Length: 433
Picture (cartoon, rainbow, N blue to C red):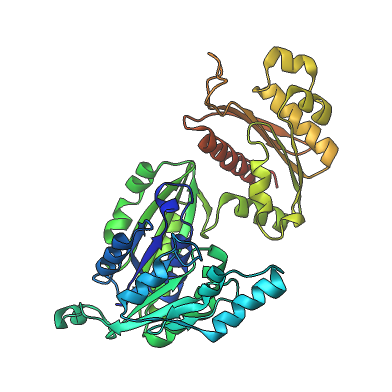
């Protein structure tokens, strides 16, 4: 089976200054094309480390994708290293040069310096992948797969003797353009690729260990080529069934049958039978009912609004938010009673209910979510420790509130509050048809 490895290059990745989103996105796209990723490696801007990574990954995968280190500055060493690694010499690619000149003269409207012109230099041993979104071209190298023994070939169906190395910019926007326009289509032409099928559902209100106990007989009876994965996150657990094969119709039918059984086994906790986050589930539910939602946020600081509006089409079901962080904002924007704030405190059932009512009155939505809590690391009280949250959801006829406790850092407490509040609204909408 054709398999891939991903190498991401840059000191900024190793010190945590930049989060590596490239390899996750690339793995998803390769998976869709029928190419499983078996290894992901990050290395710094050091010649020997990059060279060793290329040697090591070439032992494990027939396709090695590389991002980073193609810029015009001194720490960008990927291109000269690849030139030496593949026994080439740097030459100017005229199409890439024309692209660099066009970007500086027509798009950026600023003069070029010599280092910018060097962006058009590529090893003469590669195929050039033109960059339609930036100045640094990509590079496609091919060589005979020297690690492929006859025994290895027998174990890997669809084997082809070519080994592919592809180097692309580390800028996600540029890399994605090359992957979609060139790399994935070329790999699909070059290799006979299998189909990879996943079916994922989302559960809430149940822990991973309890779920595993509930479906242990189902898991034990699965065919060996169908894998079950547990993916817990923020109070939810996703269950994913996966398989791979060359007969697409057969494996899709087989996994669908197993997936239907799995849904029945977890029906009491099932949120959705699609691989989608809670905010998408809530958005679809509201859109299907032609209803709208507003939010009144204190401790989450607009994070719930961010989750909802990050999805295309959110304007059909989301009206807006009031981020009322201070007592004054709660009083003036949401008409929360001053005496209630003084006697009960902002983190209380009474206050979130008044926040919800104020948002419904002012924004005039069908449904509302209101949250107030102590996210930490400071601010906790003996009767209201860090992680204490009150959530209210409802409509003009009925508003309900619930007290929650979280025990993590500030950001995770915010994320957990948002996800649980959205799930609470989801259940309210379903129960109040």
